[in-house]
Image (cartoon, rainbow, N blue to C red; front, side):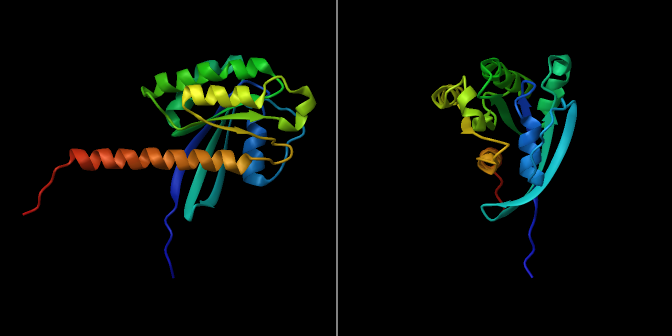
Length: 189
């Protein structure tokens, strides 16, 4: 019998209120779509899955998007290892907030680069779209982040966005291990 080790990943969903952060997490973890809007203060969702042959345990922190809870954001960020920055493709204001969220992550983590995926959600509302796919992609490229457009309602591209973040987190972990190995010059005689 083969033994599998499960690797834990701590993800944080950030974005303005009403962008569908909770809907993305619930759709990924429970295959359900939430039809009523109930602003989140803080919630955690968990999912075990296999990504590229590796068993992964995802702990997804679903954060408050309302301005009333901005003071809690730095502690959310410090607890995370990877981040999904969610905006609504039908609300330009939520898109305009993405860069400041990314900057806040880098400041809180005291880092130049963190595993971040920018997610344009609500693509099922195409006729109401105010942010083009090209704009989202250009912002992600400019900020050095991955990019996906999703529909939590239709369950489009959700696994791709989350699993891409896990792959980016793995790369960062791998590069940290390589740096540690390079710094350690042990010789056994």
